[in-house]
Amino acid sequence: MALSMSKDWQSLISLDALNQADHKHAWKRYQSSNRSKLTNEIMDGDSIIILDGDGELRRIVSLVAMRIYNEQGLLLIQMGKLKSGTMAPACQLPGGKQRQRELVMDTLQRLLETKMAPIARKVEALSIEREVETLQSKKFHIRTKYFRNVVHMAYGCSAHAPSI
Image 1 (spheres, rainbow, N blue to C red):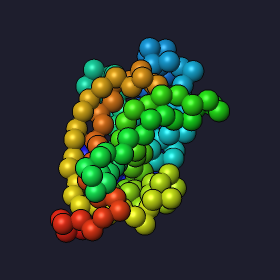
Image 2: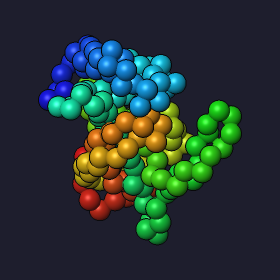
Image 3: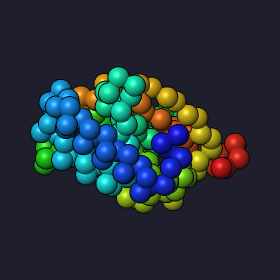
């Protein structure tokens, strides 16, 4: 239900959940040093925070990942991420967070224009599949439900499947 709300309501609910965790001194369990980073993530529209029935913080994140194949069927993989000026290994599909109220194709376009600009005009979206996974966030140590939209794409060839 929180995903369908306006950005203002999502931010309000998320910040209220953080404040309630503060009052219960529960935030200490969630790495209080990261509270400002989490607040920024909420205000930027990158995640939603709620309290579950037990009063535990839960994080909701929507992601868009690109599964890009070339004519030979080879898959493009992101091998690293720049963190604090240092390259860290990160073997994953290229992608990023979907902002609040942003459509999947709008996120895809934003990611292509910013992170994938050199190949943005050479890829074609073919289909989308949605994956849902709940994991402990490594960064915030909060149980997080990830809604990942995987966009299957073709690079440098005229794809046989229709574009979306």
